Length: 435
Image 1 (cartoon, rainbow, N blue to C red):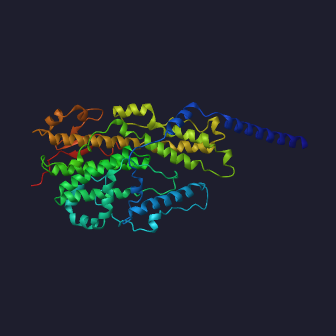
Image 2: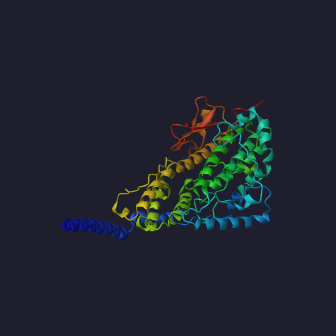
Image 3: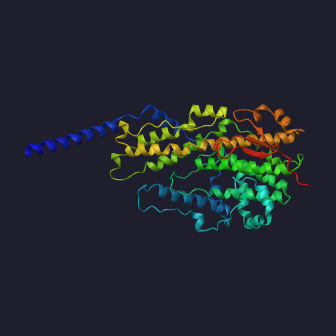
């Protein structure tokens, strides 16, 4: 019996030795080169020049905030977010939501269900059916609409707070409300105001899409571009070709350079947000299954797809950018001492695959808008002849422009929802002129 017990104890000691040796060997393994390179790529700082729209967007909800009070409110919220960030992700005392300082002192803009959204098919036609309801809904929104209009004066969006996924974000949904106001202005005969507002908001949208350090701001900007381009085309279809465009529209609806459609700056900001939060795992035994440095490098590998040279080449050619992160198996030896990091790195990989396509589609919609403006400035008796005479950089490419079957719409293929949504189809200028 004693001999058997010695065998059992010996076997247990051997298992413990093997596990300890495997864990030690795994912990001492260097970070693979591919992950080191990805970490260097994703940790490059994001810098923008000019005025930061963060404060204006952070306080967008609130009416009647004195200008002198705004810096103090931002500083108070900065301290609240910093205090939140010091708490472990596993801390049971963490509050489910963080109130912003302005919520405690100022009235928010009245609620509204916008009649038109960025994804609406024909906003102008929708409002023509019931303009009175839209006018009544917007009656208490003027202060908010003024603040939205002021956003076009900013140059970039960069969040200065301590990165923490639990912190609140700006109320991005508010930006949709101005679209209804612009379409209604046209329906009520104030087409110059409508055009100026659409151009103004598109400037803001392009700023968010191309000069921001967050994934959400980039995606919001891309959606905002699509929505404003759609309503612009609807308005121009109802106006005579000679109706002048406001000077504020100069240079707005132009095909952006491919570098402006890169999701990379946004993904670098998202990487910082993700890894800063995951670095605060403070469970007593977390050290056995969690290596912060290796986890950060593995996450960088999963999130670098939009920042690679290969991605840049795809953008230049305007091919669909399907980001497929080269994440290795979680069953590798280096994951023995970093099980949690390997699993979380794998989870982070697939959720970003469609966002790059949305930016590409926003770029295609701007090209389509530029083409419509060219057709408006170069009238032809036949739409097909006009399309053939259009400059090649607008007409051709990986996604060439086509006329619809009835010849009254111009369309371009979309990547983000290929096969389900169909092409982006916009009416040609002056094809719906109202008598």
